[in-house]
Length: 201
Image (tube, rainbow, N blue to C red):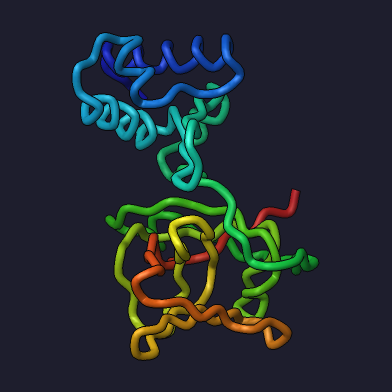
């Protein structure tokens, strides 16, 4: 996919900085390195490059901008950014599912990202360790939806969402696990699950 001259400069800076330092630059370091006066401009370039499949970011950790190898970039326009990993308890064996899906059918025109699942707290929803959940980026959720919730600004988890007065109940879909109760003010919704992908090799 074609990129602008400025986007190529950003991509080249990210590549060289990461090779030199072993970690990706902050937005401030990108702005200084390219003589950009606005962090909003940096954010715009990074977002555009991510949308074009050149980069991926983890939204729940700092210094998380990764330049994707050329081979990964060439896999097509249905590629979603893998934003990180989401806790869901202890591992469980995956069960093969031969069905195929189109990302476009699931996502439509919504802004979405992918998360790799770790654990088995949602196994009764057939979401198991190693699966990828496709998540619509949103700050709101309806009762009973499967959401990505951030608790106390630190701990992200994949659970069903229920509001109980001033409290939020984050309910696992696993009878062996207890729900998480947290004050509504301490819970931030980061997205709701649209679908699940499973890879076998």
